[in-house]
Image (cartoon, rainbow, N blue to C red; front, side, top):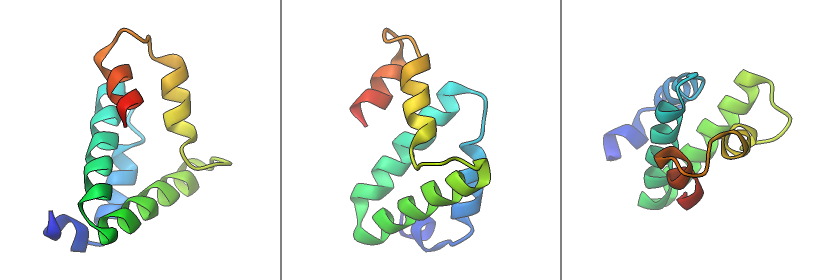
Length: 87
């Protein structure tokens, strides 16, 4: 985990993967980010950097716009929805 947090290129790599059309991939990335976020304060700031980088990459008005959109579009009886809701 420390190696991931220390690797600054992870911001760009994870933000690009978040752009996937696959809902399961996005859900797994959000789960990874939640884990990194609670791992340490440095992980929290890295997660925030990744989400900000994604917001800029996608030209979104607000952070977490993609997560909110996924929650609205994903049927509430799927594993992905439940994972997103828990996060």
